[in-house]
Length: 599
Image (cartoon, rainbow, N blue to C red):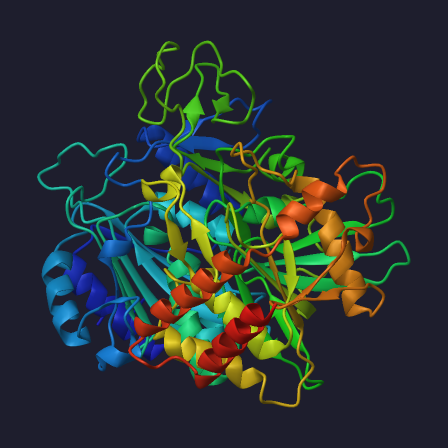
């Protein structure tokens, strides 16, 4: 057995992988700046990376993926457990032994002709009680440099593993061996066979065939949510698809909110929100834009950390108007994937400016036809940027203790029925609302538009175990003597009869956050309605904005027939969980219907 690292179990794992995948050489990554620069240079020389203009985009690179490899592949994502019921009806299940047998055949000699990189990484601040450690093995230098940005790659991780800390085994192969000195592709991957497999019972992830995003950056959704959500369930904490933001009033009092939004609901924009100028003294800070790990402190308060080290954000739609903090964040030391690139080393995507450059190559590397309606950037085009570069980054974003959570906010994209802002009656009611929330799909995200898609807690693609048990896990916190945060639902997307959005959104969302902040302090009024507590027009600080009372009432209106239909659809949803839904949900539904019919 060859000696790679001091830890026997890890060394044995590495040797087993080497024997299967048969790489040309093995490199242990150290997370250093020189390692990052050398790999970026290698990617430029191979044609994968384009070095952008040093003045416009210092230390930035762009690349284009293979057209077969542009997003998560949910139909090829599996949770592999001994008992199928542990996975539930919302996940793809396979027997662990059967899946590993299939993967072993695919992985055989899959890294021939390539370098195998061993990446020791940490999710969360290294040494924190929140921290979890991982070893990603990959044959993709693109993955290595992105992991440098999005996780904490450091030799200290190996020391922690030597001290006995558990680690997650993350094996990734492009599924594209280089045989007989063949010329490599700019974006190597397996165009036809892809698997992203999770083995929560043994803390393992195996990804094959894809080099893109969360399929390949295994610290992201695979470890950061699917594996960690199973850990959280077993260990008594929460792993959530949530942003974390700080809200500070003019008096210097600060609170932290965690919020969950499905795709295409402005999650990153919300996490980096800039308040309207007239709300002078109110500040928003960013702890994280995507994942929250939440644990109970000894004082009975929920504390949260962002386990990531960087942002893997969606580029299209991001601009100086929608999210100036994101633009500032990605202005240096960033890797762009599937955006447009100009001959002089600039980048562009839909929404960045009103008009595209006169000469620009699209995400497929083709010269863009100005008379064509084809997109220049892929709708899922991404940027990887260090979180520390964000102007709104919270000073406590790397706190070992985490930040105390005062409220949970959940929001979907609904053109009707769901009000702008709703405070739940109590903890169980809030969990119910989060479990039944939904969004109307967008063409960019799901290929069809306007279909109501239930996405409980915005965790549908990311929960690593049975979601019925996930709901019970959340309900269980309400049975404990702890300081429970209030729970809110928002909907920025109600439309008028002409199909136009009524609420202006973006910075104006601060007005709703201010009301929530003051509700938690007991300093804001609310109406007691049949579905929860809601502000009146007079309860919101409108300042000099011209948003009128009629428009507010229209986006806060409760249509009895629509809501009774909504509640019946909730019961249909519960049937999909094979009668394993918490009993509390049926009681809540019954009482909501009774209250609605009585009004």
